[in-house]
Length: 254
Image 1: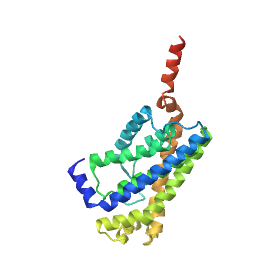
Image 2: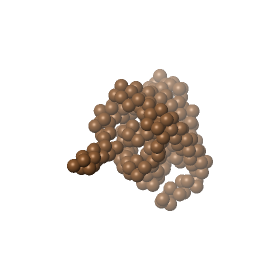
Image 3: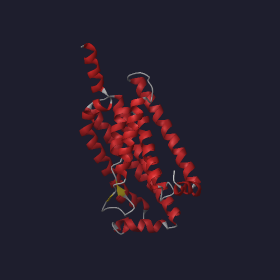
Image 4: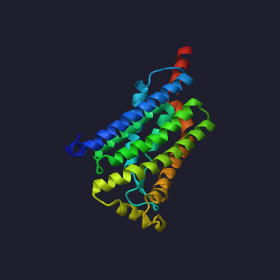
């Protein structure tokens, strides 16, 4: 951990404690949801095994690389950007369950902090983690209850809608006020950046998040969902090692 990151932790202890509490709560929710899914389907088994841990590391590394490539969007101020870091995590969550998905989100954020530190007193990292989890958790739980193509479509659609609603609400009630305090910038100034794009925002934080934040989360969810639906079934046997198990079984019979 670099000195800059240590200084950020010390200077923003309140945000860090809040961040850790949110992480713990989301892990607890994911654990309960996964146990419910196991009880309904295949029965209890270990949440983590060696293969899952290796895959969590791999998908988290891919996610943090994708996180570095941020795409500006024309309908929101410059501090909102689109990235596709949830794509490998959504695929990995479909394969390995909610707890693995939340762990991927956590490791992604941890790697990002170690590589680049934080310029937002951990507020931006909390937003990315929490909003990402609102996509993967409902999607993975719905899919794991009934693993069909139709259910997968329902799962990613639900996840996208939940993420869009939560991300929009979270920005209005927490993130924008937190950024305002952090940078010593009046909230009206932040809203004014959106008003410059959409004059009809007219100083309203509600209209700001509806016009600028909701479309960003909706587009992000749709892209991640469509790609996941297209590639997951092809990747699933490889991710779960089913090809290797089949080859081993054939060798054993021979």
